[in-house]
Length: 111
Image (tube, rainbow, N blue to C red; front, top):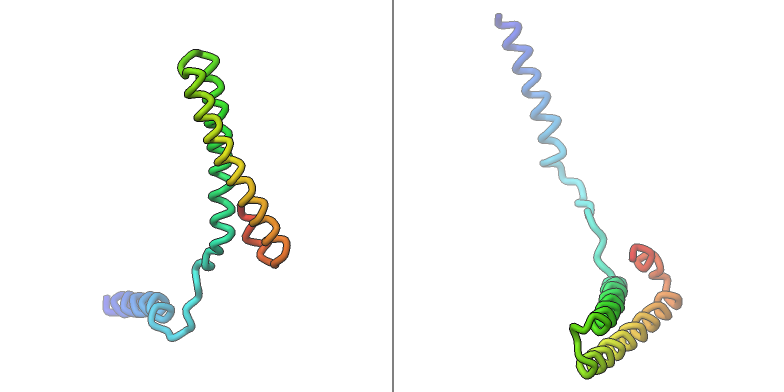
């Protein structure tokens, strides 16, 4: 029976060594992620916002056709949404021009 205990002991030591060496070794830490590019994050956010605005305009048109919204409310809300959509699309264009100038196009591809 002592031979079995010796094999168990050797197995436990081997497992501890295999697990412990990577945990306690002094190798340089690798980064698990890359830092986010603020321009790329803003670009992604603006693309989502543009889609939200366009969807809101479609819903507003539907609400007008079904009589849920008065003509006055429709006009004021539509003008507000169109102005915001225009501002968002202008900012998207600015960011796209910046991406073309600088080699940060890889971050834009993720969008």
